[in-house]
Amino acid sequence: MKILVTGGAGFIGSHVAEFYAEKGNEVVVLDNLSRDKLLNKNIANKEYNWNYLKKYKNVKLIKGDIRDFELMKKYSVDCDTIVHTAAQTAVTTSVTNPSEDFSSNAIGTFNMLESARINNVKKIVYCSTNKVYGENVNNVGITQTSKRYNFEDDYKNGIPENFPIDLCEHTPYGCSKLTGDIYCQDYSRLYGISAGIFRMSCIYGTRQFGVEDQGWVAWFTIASILKKPITIYGDGKQVRDVLYIKDLINAYNQFLESKIKTGVYNMGGGSKNTLSLLELVETIKDLTKISPKISYSDWRPSDQKVYISNIAKVQKELNWKPTVTPKDGVAKLVEFVNNNKSIF
Ligand SMILES: NC(=O)c1ccc[n+]([C@@H]2O[C@H](COP(=O)([O-])OP(=O)(O)OC[C@H]3O[C@@H](n4cnc5c(N)ncnc54)[C@H](O)[C@@H]3O)[C@@H](O)[C@H]2O)c1
Image 1: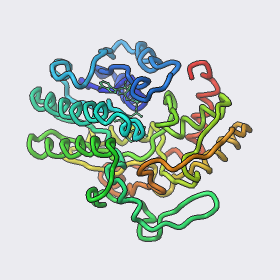
Image 2 (image 1 turned 60 degrees about the vertical axis):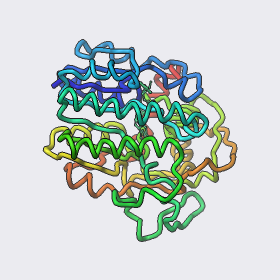
Image 3 (image 1 turned 90 degrees about the vertical axis):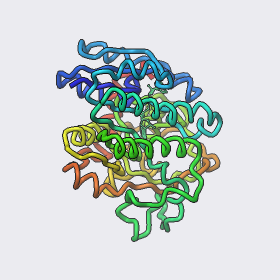
């Protein structure tokens, strides 16, 4: 199989590229190495994943932009599959620079789909997000304890795929990703491309360069170990379901090996694998014996107090389930950061 991975120098994309390279496939990675610029952060080793993939002779690395349609068309020729991970990834920077966000997430995804249509690519995977449900999630009743918020009973198993997506605020990131999500569904229905659309909650794991604006599990772990201060926006009781990267890639692969034409899935650890920010700090403390320096600031726009994916559909249709608990996953991350302090 020949597979194009957009954003393949990023966290999720590089794990996808590695997974399919290990299986002996021809992998093309297309990335413009812009994570640091997009997030306005100095990421010490921004080319780490790019260089990491150089050990695979069957991975071809192309430095390029998904907004360049001719380039997208050129590198999707003869591909069986595209896994589209490239994006502007943070809500915060989408608010300060909506134009950059729209061009990469909406237009870039459209370019990917048009290239797939023209080149007769059979299958795509799209990295969507829980942010497509926007502020509607905050209409779900919640309860709270000293360390976390919880959904009330009606949603105790999480948010299902038919949860309302409109008539609320989303932030530009939510809008641009939803644009891509709906386009992928339509291209699948209209042009017969098989599309797996994964509306992901929080994915974490090794080789993730988490920063304050994106990738909170990795950021809290890196900051704790490197003794950098952590700001918690809100009260820290926000809860997310968390999914270890290996489990995510297995789900993508289950989809790509299936005969499903259009699959829209809420994707995360589900109700059995959740963490609040405060609980993550405790978990890291237990594992490292480090107490990070924490300060508190105002809530971020449209932050969801609780988001938990209802994963019943993905479990059933893809015969898949999460296998790594938050405690074990965070332990793997702690081990990785401890062994690679100089790259952060
Ligand atoms: N990590 C998560 O928890 C999470 C949750 C929900 C959705 N997502 C989605 O998953 C995808 C991957 O996220 P990630 O965590 O791996 O982020 P990441 O920043 O590590 O990877 C994204 C990659 O895309 C590249 N990129 C950005 N704009 C580009 C452009 N215009 N042209 C070419 N390359 C470009 C970046 O250089 C980067 O390497 C994104 O689409 C994101 O919206 C991630």
